[in-house]
Length: 482
Image (cartoon, rainbow, N blue to C red; front, side):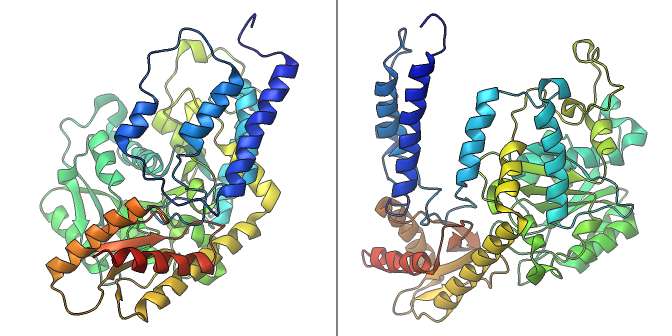
């Protein structure tokens, strides 16, 4: 090589070879186990080498990549993934990522990425329209693509802090000398909120994690009482977080009631919809998401229920100006290009300056499939989850722990005969460990009511009823080891 480029013929051949590996992944995804179960020491040994000083033939590199990376990958894309909230990606998005990488756009300033900047603005509007998040005056919603749900919640809470306390010039003076700002959420709210409050200098001591109802939704009366108590004690109630699908069970808080309380006390209302927010697009769940449009900020994840590959989180707020007032900082090296022609710079509306074009794959997917196809797939996942819950509830060797509104189903394997709570917890912890070793399906657990449960999350457009039946067969098969 005279430089770092192949010749045209070499590059064409390299792309063809790489595409063949991609095709092999898609061809084998239904047959591959959910988890390869290679030990950490083994995987580490594959990459334990000195930095190469000279290059190797690209065909050999692809072969090594296939053996060490592709063949050993946890099968997020396949139908046997039930852990956490992992979608399978789409083929259009796979192509989109290749095309986006080929032009290497920095979606920070308009003149660095003209089309990608406009595409991100459009994806923000489409995402807001998809979940029926609108303004009363029908003006544009503001928003930004981020890495995922954690970053989307941090971004929403950053805007909340900066806007709510703008009169105190919080960006310039910091939090010093102010009374504690109190944030409210349920004890089922995602752990990224704790991290966000630490990063924002608010502190988790000022985070009220309130009790849940039996259906794992926020107890509205507890919220009202706690706000009044904090006011009496001289604190400053600041923000309440509603869940549009908790990670544990997919519970949807009473968003309308929370919006009423936020309005009554003049609090910022943020919604964590990273897992379930996109289900607000479904007619069947319209009433359950009532009040979402009243939120000041909403976090959603396109790499969950829009089936995009990582990363594609999004924060939505009521207008672009709030993002600008939260993040803009003039820098001499960024401020000399012309602004009279309507160009829009995302670096003036978010923390990052270097940003890849996350919105491009979402834009291509909307264009290729249409919004209705995504609604159909989300509804299919929910229907499959209800089917799984029915199978669990009707079985003598399983116990159901939640009725799924979305697509998370929590249950225990109880087997035959009576067992103590401690014995059941240990049994299910051991079973989860053995299921990972077995590898045929990938499934994780959680804690509900202090009990260890198996948690199946169905967020995959490729998953069908036979895969759910297979899951239960595998669980019972592995349980025979005990």
